[in-house]
Image 1 (cartoon, rainbow, N blue to C red):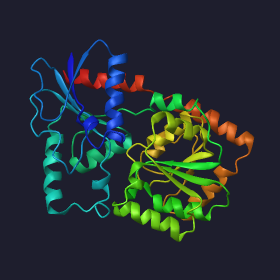
Image 2: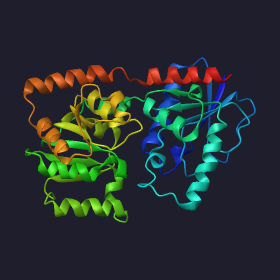
Image 3: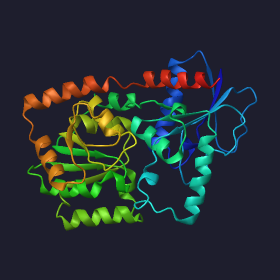
Image 4: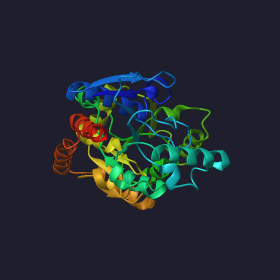
Length: 336
């Protein structure tokens, strides 16, 4: 079987974000672990070769008209999440957005199969599109091996808690800062993510203003985008990682941190219930809960920290790109 995979995210602003990393690691893993089939890549605007048996679009956005509405070949579409649809009051779509969503919904219904990152995302697809759940297959993501390799590198000297991600509403970064300010701990907070250094982005401006108003300028460090190797080193050097999101389609930093030996705080609900494993759990809507989680994480005894690290590594080993590649191929094969 010859599969054509759309790698447009690798040449767009999504290159270093979740969709870009998923696309890159998927293609790499398929070529490494599933060599019974052949894989052709293309970008938007290019013609798909006639000898292709199946096409995979590894991304879906409810408000952008991609992938194309008509499919000439059996087609698989990956839906990472429908968070803007789940929370319409937090992501206003307007009239144009509503029209595009209706078009995108019809496009998705035309797919032969849909891959979802989690059971939570699968339920959302069924709920908001009416697509038969039998067409939707859950395939879990996995940590990037390059990040895990980076965990063996040079350690940072200071004690800090780490946040990795974007600053969309669902990430609850404002709640994290409020919880961190109340926590009884002397550690700092290191925030990884390029969006936080965008001086023109209103959300970034608001976060920096909040840091100043909370008197946390000396304790919160924004480091922007970092390489995979550097990210692994940060995970391994940290006191722990925190992801106090309101909602996630998957929540990859949870598994990345565990695979690098870092204890994790994550919130309850959505896909995080599926991948949290031995994480310390908090209520994203309760600042005192976040504060208590940060306090506990920063003050773990050596024995408790070692136990969480060992349990986390064991748990994260359940999620690999080899497994993701094999499960993805099973989806492909079910289409032909």
